[in-house]
Structures are given as structure tokens and as C-alpha cells.
Image (cartoon, rainbow, N blue to C red; front, side, top):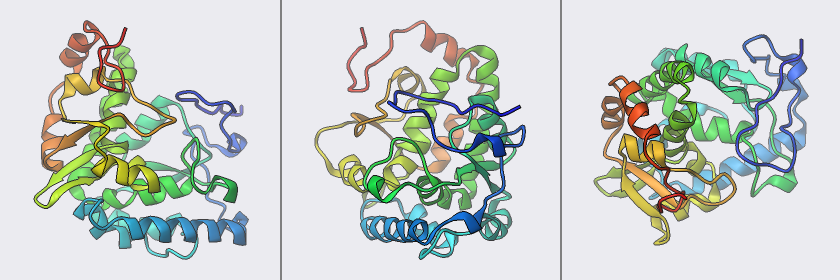
Length: 277
């Protein structure tokens, strides 16, 4: 049986990726030999551009961990990253052909396995891509998996996701993922910095998230975050800010079941911070 791709948000085209290669858990081998010279060059140029933007915008923990990815002039081999990553936090990355459904995704995270899309965008998509590719997943997500506290938070999120599925609360929990792991901001002593992968892998949103006067920036609060919708095709209109990864970990320690019940009884909040209709 060929597994099906997942679709999140809105897009004018179906997700790409060869799902016929999947094992039942949606993982597949990384076919490193299949990458072309153009693929490697795209990765190199994306890495160089994004790394140059990080000072003063990315959190210190991310900048410190980025060299752990290894090579930056071509697409790295996952097994080489895993040698360093498993020693650091007992995590590993696994290849997937694209977006995968929630339960397999949660299951991988709960077992300290992070799914990384194995294809890379085309040169025409250099500045913007609708769905995550290997550059977004590797550059944006993997460095902070070398941080023990953040790595434990991501595992806890996966464990919580499996419970949320049984409670019908995946949408509420997905908003927490979006506003922390993908688009979270951190308050450092020297100012506001990004730690979310969606910000860190975007040349435009990195500056917007940290310095633009336009978006709403709020302290992270579970109920508010779980009620707030998000944008998938524009810069975020709301960001949530933490003081430390330790705060994030401790905030997500309690049982979320009572929180879900409370949130589901309240009206949703639009992505711009206004009460949704």
C-alpha cells in the first residue's frame, strides 16, 4: 500500500514527494546520490545567505549549535549528522518524502526521531517555498536538537501530540508547535531573538519577526497560544515570546487535558490578535 501525503493549511498544488518509498512509519532512505550539482549548489547558497543574517537576530543557542550540522557547501548525509546528534542528545534525524500525517509525526518525535524532508526546492523557489524542504528542516530545526533542554521539549511535544489526537485536540496543540518550534521568539539579555525554525530559515521573516513594528508580540501563554490561528502564506502577525527554553519545558510539563477543555469552550483568536468571528 502506498502511503498518502499530508496536507496542512492551503495550497494550490498537492504536496510533492515520492511516498511509494515509505516504510509504514513514513520514513525512507536518504538517496544522497540522487542529488544533482544544482541541488547541492542551491543548498550552499541558501546556507550562506541565511547564516550571514543570523547575528543579532537568531538566539545564541542556535548560533552556537549551527556548526554541528557539519558541511555547508553541499547537502549533508543524514548518517553523518546523526553521529554527532545522538552523542549530544540521543536524537536522530530520519528522511521522509514530505509532509506526513499527525500521528506518525508525533510518534517519531516521541521516539526522539525528527523527520527531515529529503528533497530540495528548485532554483525558482529560492526565495519562497510553500512547504518544508531539506534546507528548512535541516537548517531551521536540527541545530537546536543539539540543545538538551530544547530537545527534551520536542520529545515532550510528540508525546503530547499522541494524547491530543485521542482527545480531538490536534488543532490546539498544532498552534503551540507553530508558535514555538516554528515561529517562536526568545528574550535574551541583549534583546529579542528568534528560535523558531520557520523564522530562522527565512531571509525575510527573520528581520520582520525580530524588528518590525507591525506584528503583535506576546508572552507565551498556553491558552492564548492554543486559541490563536496562524498564517501559512504570509509573515506572522502574532509572535509569542519566551524567557528561556527551561521556561518552555516547564510550561508544557502539566497535563494539557484541562487546558484543551478550557480552550475549546472559548472563541478563537485571529492571526492578527483580534477575536475571530
